[in-house]
Length: 136
Length: 391
Ligand SMILES: [Zn+2]
Image (cartoon, rainbow over all chains, first blue to last red; front, side, top):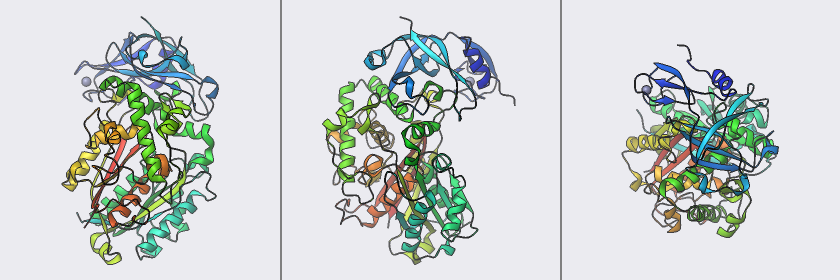
């Protein structure tokens, strides 16, 4: 069975600030990031759908000790965002001072942009990632 | 299915910058386990070896095969288990199933790791391979980052002020260091105070250095045998009476349950059901405290505390020897150290020692302990549990 929405397609779309997910025709759940099957019911009758990219922060961390090759980026904020359509996705939060943010971030409305991680010797190429900023 | 027991155990010192290779460390632990079981290497019918990152730390794949040859178990089937921190626990669980099935009578299981050879940047990079490489890692997620996010989510879900949770987390680390002082194999044998934990440098907010386990080198191994065989080899067999294992999706795919780890709840229920036991029957627990918050989340999943109240166990001293549920009397991953591919075998070694009553001299014996629980988490959710019982 062919993969409906691959990482490469998702990533290339995100590079144009379009966030793609999958809508389940069985239970209507939106799955994002994409997978072979619906995150809720495991169904395979899925349709690619564009998501709004809007949501709220459910949790965050500020990374001070970064992985190899990304030391120059730290400190940086990583957030988990609950999208309007339901699913959660991981991204970075920008337009903040990472050293000064705290629990007040949780619940803040955010909107989507993107940045490309150019990849390293283990990553099989580049990867677009969500870059969130405040919408409220 | 036959009853299965652990007949012998072995454990190296856990340290920074070991002068030995992963094969050499495993061989030392394995020979101790084999000798303690009154066996010879050619009695071993199969080997299960946990190893997560040898490809990166030593440029060595297929470590399991070289281990078999190194210790004189010539040409036995040897299998490497890679499930990040839970690698060795999976190896022991599968060994128990193979022996229970009758396929083998005697299997050597354990793990080895030399993470400190990588240095902090590469180790941080490779530990993050236990997260989703396409959808989580590009944001610069790290392994502490995952638990850091769970800590903030925990506060938000259960309406606990971050300062209060941080203090409970610090108490977890302080207790682990306290018991680690008396564990001869521990990487750190030094007491820490709440103030020291709270003033250590930030790794991934809100996790500070002393909320985090170290990078470590070490190995541990156990001999798993059928009941009949084990009774002939030792007068203190420790039975594997329950096991469980469950997988998990990437962090964001676990959205309905976080900060609860659903896979752990599934895994430990399998183990409890198989053993016909419940949390109230556990006398001693070694749980996966890769980060201080991880302990608090773990005691809830394992049934020792209500959700949102795990930290109170440490506040009230209920995780100490002589109290409600002694947790990580080895010093845990925090103080004993965390050689990831070996950690599950190290936890199992500790529980076996406790159930045999052999830790009196170290001042760490939980008196009369008869049932112990091993809890290991791999990456961002995969879970494995073992329930061990002395007759
Ligand atoms: Zn569905």
